[in-house]
Image (cartoon, rainbow, N blue to C red; front, side, top):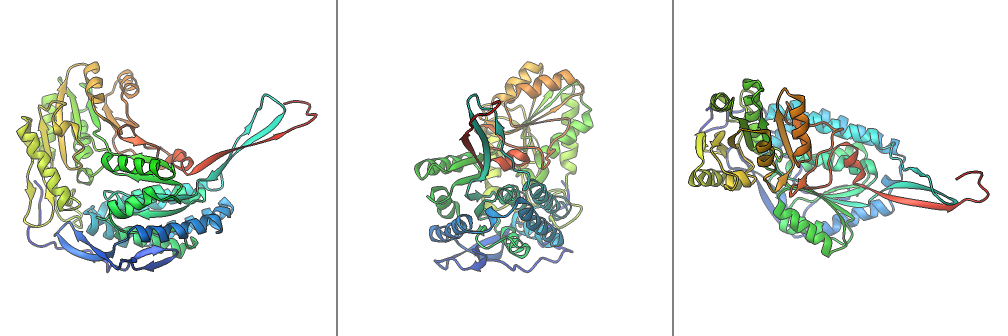
Length: 501
């Protein structure tokens, strides 16, 4: 395995002073009503970073009241789209100006690679804001061709107050993926960041205010899922809720929405994504894709290629390459530019992954490489590869959300499709082949929201992502991600003495 600092995390990067630890409601940073706080922990060491205001139902009520006032009576939904766009562009510029600090906050809070945050994640969230800013003045309805003497058209109107519940694995990316289209649509919102990673969300709230987003439009309430998150899902004055996280919590969100005011729900609930490598693939490139697909962001990524199926003709070669590459993968301090994998987000997730590794061994899968924690401090785990797995094993069925791959061989294209679809999830899939017919057949046969051919993690602002089956419903990104924050209203008026319909 790569290097790892055992006792001390030596970093050349200046760890930022934590500036924002309170709730952001109606344009102000405020203490929680209860006065309670919770700890946010550095997964590199297990040490305390800061104490954060713990929002509860009463704080959510205040935030919703601010958002409702801003929606019903404020300027934001009533501005021309071009004016919302101008403010969003300024917000994006401010993110660019603070890229180092934002990246560092996600590194100390989530264990994410600082170099990737600075080069990819934070510039990408500014790009997401700009993409939706560009759409803000292009929200059109249709003129309809009626069969009787009526003139009719549709309007796309902002859905109202939106609750966003954000996961911890991509604190910046997921936040901006949700708030950007909602802002462009003219909605107001209450954001509940993951309790593991509250720091960057509060910083973005500060930048939004500097950019000129009016008070009450964007509110951030930090706190826990069963209290603050549940209050968002059950609130009678929230019109839509967007949630990314586990199917267990997704079910609760949907139930709460049904039992309250039937608010619109969109869910992205993880996956167990297959990567299928055919005999004609370039062995080295395929092995690299497979490894990156599971260890990137330490496997804490909903579309991770956690099930890899390799055709029997190149199986042994791919296995050999994979093990070599996994052993060379560098795990350690995420501030070190040489490091490729940082610590898991927290102790709970670290222990959960290690439990799944034990299940894999107990159920009879073969451990090819890895399988152990690293170092005496922090939450580091070796890249882990199991082979000879059966579809009924826990390591093949459950989303582990860590650097753990289940690897198997297959004979025919039909077998590969059947095994790939044998999952309750359907978020993403990858196909590696030089045969266009194989690529076309398999991409149309797999029940998943995103299919990558000869690539993986190929995200783009214009490309919607969403799930089939228990991976949820509703899309983020692309124009689909904008439309979910807009209601369609039909307007019909009679026409008299018209020369044509």
